[in-house]
Length: 362
Image (cartoon, rainbow, N blue to C red):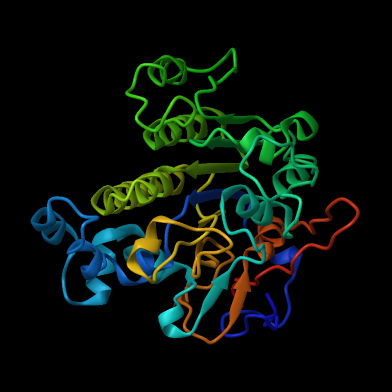
């Protein structure tokens, strides 16, 4: 991919001072395979009227109005009622703003590797359970003073222990149907250990429901007050691969609601209030033309490199939707995450880390 790297300028500072940053804690959320098209356009009328949508009248009632602005708010009310006013959103290609993958594979493991290690590694070209040799930014933060043992990940997809290399990093990563191991866990967390094994496993025997991942994350925040928490949802990708546009939309709106609930909770908690940044993104895009390609992604699917992200917090200017003709890459997110907390992410030898995206307030 030969593209000129362009530094975002419209919402950025000319200088960035670590001494002035206010972010003390960070919440990262990913919506697996969530297309930029629905994020910025809302539900697609062609998709609603296609073979991929059951209960068309119900879907139109829930998600369709003519106005793009109102339509996307129906699907993502938190993104378009809160972050659009108090934070920033990147990747609306209709407005000329692009957010993209630098890796050429354009599916999940390579996408998450890029997000968290800061570069596209040609060796990370499978979704198989291979161990990632690259240091990730969560591992790096977990080694910094004041963050030791305060970084954790909950994911629906079972592959994150390998992506984040728990054997080397020592990060607590609870993925798939893994039970929380803390002996002092409260009654709610212990109940979730039991509950997750009794809910219908409609995503398969290895990937758990996003509801369980959300509940673990929320309750862990309440009890343990982590400094950095990563919450990885999966169902949007599953529903798209299944070709069920109604469920894809429903899961997207549900996950927006989960994110709102987490944000409202931390803003009501003195430990987190006004000192926590929330970053939301995806691991890859999906196809668009022909229509059937919306189910797919990968190196041979045009459009699956097109991604998006949103950020809100005390160091982020409330400029809303970024509409300037600039390009950001997911390889920049690792350093962005680090610098929001006042760190300079230095990865293991052999590769550079993408430059941070400066979202800070003047």
